[in-house]
Length: 49
Image 1 (cartoon, rainbow, N blue to C red):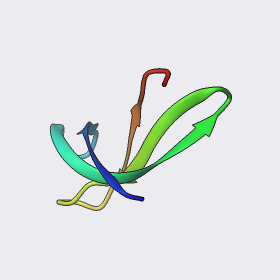
Image 2: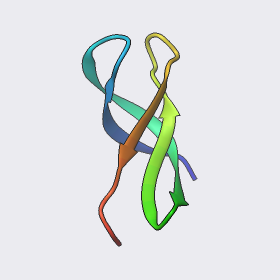
Image 3: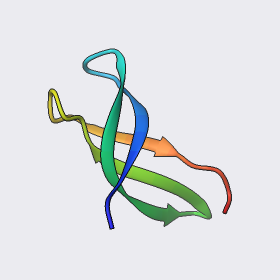
């Protein structure tokens, strides 16, 4: 189930929308995906559900 999130791409140095999967590590929810322009991995820490 891929959803769209807004995150910061470190390589492009811009905020971009990316589609990603939600995973939970150490009690933190995080959206992980790739930048649609350069292909770099992007992450976004989400709030508690």
